[in-house]
Image (tube, rainbow, N blue to C red):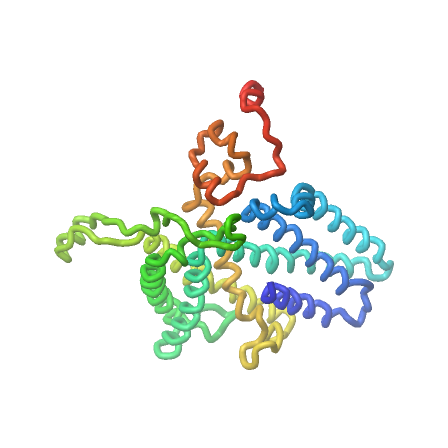
Length: 349
């Protein structure tokens, strides 16, 4: 949350500095108001999804969760109306420009930082590995570029070289593969975060998913003939780590290139001076946000079971054939705001 707020502040401040001479009414006030609204929406959704048992025990939380989306929409509408009332005839175009600036910043910073939290709730390993991959790639690309760099990679970042880009890729894949092996052995890193209603605390205890259980793989015939190995034991997550590392090495840097282009457009070197010698917080998280988004999409597309079943009461799960009753009851995720209806009344519709 602190990182998110600081990144938002750095980007909004750039716009304010460029156009502060126009004295736009309520610009900064509305920007921070919309930040509060969007965070209320996202974090409210997270609490309802992952801590349903906790919400059920508190009457005020039940009310807030039951009408969460309506409250969020009402709060946003209030800000929207305030913006319309703040319009000044001679600054119409500029005010709408800054309105769009705020919303794009919310999309880039708040939405993606929310995905970081979502990844964390899937298990610490989905948080640590992607972040470590980006850091490793940044370091290794620099080292390979420093010692072997000859060919410029992109004009937006003249110091980036093809040698650093390619060397960083291979080094990051190896690093991610090893890190995945080490972390997959510990339940603390692989289990999703949950709320235990009996102890009134958070827990990371679970039966590890199949992707965190050592399995034996048969090697291709070519490899068998070359290395004289027929099988190899791996955690399936190690294979997933190769895809995560590949994205973090080949596509992740484009988050940094995008940020470089943005800074060049406004003729600034860094987003801020928060970290001496390294610029602002946003300068450190430009690639991390893109990596977090990919990780979230990867989990949803290739890892997680159908999530549709999570949104229906326990008594209805067999109707959808999801077969995850034990999973839902273990996590205490039964949504209290959907009334229990007779299953026969649903099937007859």
